[in-house]
Amino acid sequence: MKIAILTSGILPVPAVQGGAVETLVDFYLDYNNRHQLHDITVYSVWHPAVETHPALQSAVNHYIYIKVDGWWKKIKKKVYQASHGKEYYHYTIEYYLRKALQHIRTQQYDVILIENRPGYALKLKDVTDARLVYHLHNEKLSTQVERYQEIYDAASSILTVSDYIKSCVQTINPQDTKTQTVHNGIDLQAFRQIPAKRPIEFSTDDFLLVYSGRVNREKGIMELVEALALLKEYTHIKLLVIGGSFYGNATHDDPFMRELKAKAAPLQDRIIFTGFIPYANIPSYLSMAHVAVIPSVWDDPFPTTVLEAQAMGLPIITTRRGGIPEEVTEEQAFLLPTDEHLVDNLAKAILDLYEHPEKREQMGKASLERSKLFDKETYARNFFKALEP
Image (cartoon, rainbow, N blue to C red; front, side):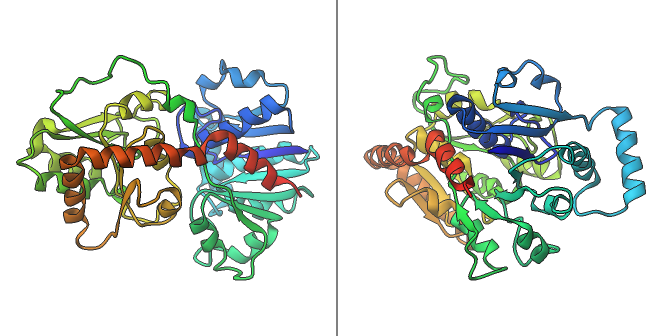
């Protein structure tokens, strides 16, 4: 098939600036390159780091870049905003889409795959006869979404990263038959080859918790810090916070980050903030931990941080929200409710694993076994199977 991929319009592909969606796109593009399945054209925003990326040497994956940054592009985007008024997405994204559509009009694609921006279909359906396929990573299509019926009707098929996201789509049509789940995957091998040198040195007596992902309120990191404060007499329990408040930006600061660091300040050196870490370096940080804590307080669709912790053979403390229960079992994870007792329950779960090394070992083995279900090869194979008409 001849396939076009429309990305988010925010981060580039290849994922040189990170981003869970962009990394998953890289996985199935790599699979396509190795198996020579389809002729694929990716429409992506430009970033200087993509220029020398080896992925651009593929004979079957092609990349068309759209520049949206720089002073001249900012002027053009502002002119676009002024001349078009309010559109479905932010004007920067709509500018990217307009540029992509100019090229798509000249092509004959069998499928146009829309990554997490189903609203693109409102314009695409009038300029192409290609089948429109949505790949939904978040709650982007439900009865709570503007023009949901029109967007739903325009899709030939819809792929969701979890049954939870599928259930959101089915609020539009309870008898829906065009939506199917393809669970995310990760590069398991990347989490098996850990460098001998540790990126941060800790005492051999330290018991290290690790949180990784975006640092914002909905991820439950504030509740985790509060739970650690309840364990103040256990000075060897420490927390490593991997990530920043925005993708690919180690220095980005915001009111929540300031509030979080103020909350963490009394714990002094027991909480270490790394800021943004390149994805390739994540395994070396996770390898230092005894337990992964992913305390999302929102309906997290299918966080890859859970899969990464599994791949490292870590016991997991997480919450019963969104697609998380589809990723783990109670043999390897504490699944906590996000009620008024969350902070207390986080503290209890941490202390339980701190005091019972044999339980940690059993849960870790269960995590490793569970991780085999979510390798990137299985993900990409299932993904392309789902694209078949």
